[in-house]
Picture 1 (spheres, rainbow, N blue to C red):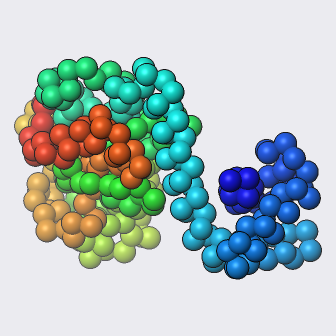
Picture 2: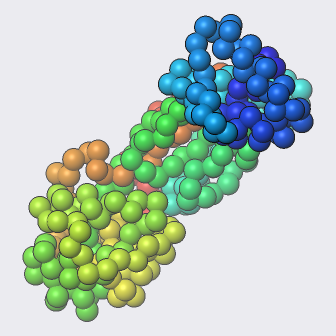
Picture 3: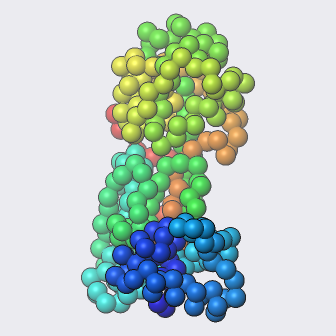
Amino acid sequence: MNALRAFWAVMRQGSFRSAADELLVTPQAVSQQIKLLEDILHVPLFERKARVIEPTEQAIVLSHFIEAGFDEFTEGIRRVTNSTYRNRININVSPYFATRYLMERLERFRELMPGADIRMTTMVSIRDFAADEVDVCIQWGFGAWKDYDSQLLVRDPKIICCAPELAERIREPKDLTTLTLLHPVMARNLWGKVLRHLELEPTEIAGEIEFQDAATMRRGAVSGLGIGLVSRMDALSDIKAGRLVAPLGTDMLDGMDERDVPGFYLVVPRAHKRVKIISTFCDWICAEDWSTRRELD
């Protein structure tokens, strides 16, 4: 165990000295533990170059399993030593998904698990599962979260929208590149995917503004800051109310490659699913039909 702890500390810290500081031992002690592990495995784990060490391919592969193992070990200790955690589930949810989809249905899960102690936070970015003691996340994105299991819950298709006063400047797709494009900071490449779908070159744009969340970006579009990619249901509501216009039509992005259409995903470390309340929540949320949602202004 000491050799594995030393190895994992070196992989995270990038040097024997920094790992030693973390473990409160000498660099020589860390070096000895690494040498012991290399002897046991019969493979080199680090290439030593002067004062710099570089992990070998074998070390990189091993580190993924060590990380998962320590995470599972820590979670197990936490669950069995603190009874208050046994029926608690800590959920981090995209603010948009929480207000538009989840809140009105969460009581269904409470009925399924009447003793559940549900703790919910809302953040745009994915949390550190271990440091923040988060069990599951519901995250907006494209489904690529390394080292975690992810399951698509619902797609979030977009409509190209702008304020009515800007609409007259957009007669064809290439006119988009002459105006400011609005996009969420979590998907800087979303407009690039859209422009490629429209057979345009993403590098030839007049300007862009990033927003931390979709709600603020939507307000920016309504206020005339630029052209926004607005979630379909919100866009249709705003168009009906006269707040926004779809200058190229509401179906312009139909037929985009599904890999380029964002969505809301359940994201969870594989080891967490071994806890009953977490696995029950995962089963419930994946079985729900999220294709309809609550309408809010």
